[in-house]
Image: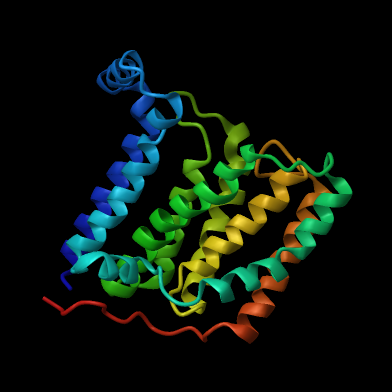
Length: 257
């Protein structure tokens, strides 16, 4: 696989991310949304644009790097392996966060409002940030894993901070916490044999523990919440070393050109 081709595909994917973050400041896109609103398109449907753009970018990147058909795209992005095993892994690893949330949170809240943060966001973010920005360049494109993981982690952190014309240092803790989490999710992806289900289920379980108990309004949290998060990360690392597949060097998933 040509390094230049991989880098061009990555640049295009990052360009989609930039567009997604800045689209609210682009008058033509805002006008397009007003037009859909005037046609009676529900707000929930109109707000699917970021989800569709990011998933579309991931699928397009996989196809551009040699994936063939729906099954090939899913394989290239890491949607392989056992979902059940990943769900069991995440359920056990998330226990410290669940206990901490029950102790320091505002009480258990179960509502449909949790679905976007617990199910939709983890799927979209893992497919894009770990599948498209890590699995494709490292496993398919042959790029070095750790540089790719850190760049993708930085972009993941940046996606959780506001993008404005003024530099807001109050967002730095959120950027650092989510950026480090992005690198850790990439490690989980690799050590699980490039199965995206593991970091996806792990992020979903951690989001559930954080949101269902109302632990914090942002990703930073307080002392008790972070002790629970540290316990979950430590337990997940131990479980990953014991139960998941050992780390393997990236293997091409398409015929080199």
